[in-house]
Image (tube, rainbow, N blue to C red; front, side, top):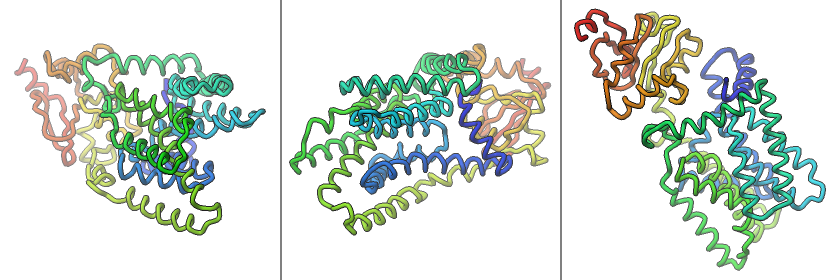
Length: 419
């Protein structure tokens, strides 16, 4: 079943407003999720400029996690859940009757389950509470998480299938490979993010110099969650980018908020100047097109059904797109969302039939007969599509449909001669 039913329900609502326009939905996805993550702490912190400074610091020293905020993918809602956890845990601790806080966390957890689906990773914030020995908060937030996951699963209409499938997908994706390079890149381990460690060390040293050192600045669930995500990043980088980094960013913002509170009064006019200046620099840091990071994809043209000259080089209804590149699926689907063909390789290899997954793994390793099993199976309805140079595959008639995008269809006579 659909892995992100909530997110696709939301997109369908927007689709009814803007029409079936892929580009408009993409813009809505990117803007909505970025504003949700980047804007929420501004409403939660007493010195919101501390959050903008934090984003600027990471944009300069650790650009990768910031750039991922513009992908428009539902995992950003789980990153938003981390921010809510970082804010609410202390509110729950300090409130004798934290009914509202627990209810809010339950609702956000339910939405995160329904929208993103990685419900099993909600154990990470709870484990951070365990490490911090916050037993009362752990009990309340564990109950909220349980109820939230259950509600989110019920929203899908098939709760048991959904909950099982998400765990199955994670285990299968991480285990069905002989080496790391066969995994999707976001499942690769990271390099330790040394700049993030330097930022933490600098802030802790600054605390000591100011005479404000206390054990609580590191002995708390927010810091422990950041440390957990960082440690597990050596297993898969998404532990860091989706869980550790949001927690660390919130922790950095709290440290900067303390500094601002120490030196400036609440209504000091210099806070306004600082906020405006930092916001402007952050905008320039993000919006510039260094290395073509915003426009490189726009230069690539892809075949579309609406173009008469492209149509013969796209699969017929019921046909299959064969490819060894996941990007072919992403971009061809984006430009042809209602096409009546299927893809041998989609957003995750483990969803392939077992036989095709074995063929694909052999292709990745360069072993065996490589593409031969797929070529033997191709029919006149199917196409082999590749981005880059012309594939060195005999037996297919090739054409560069758009610059850099090649499509091959079955040449029966040539293939019979080769056999």
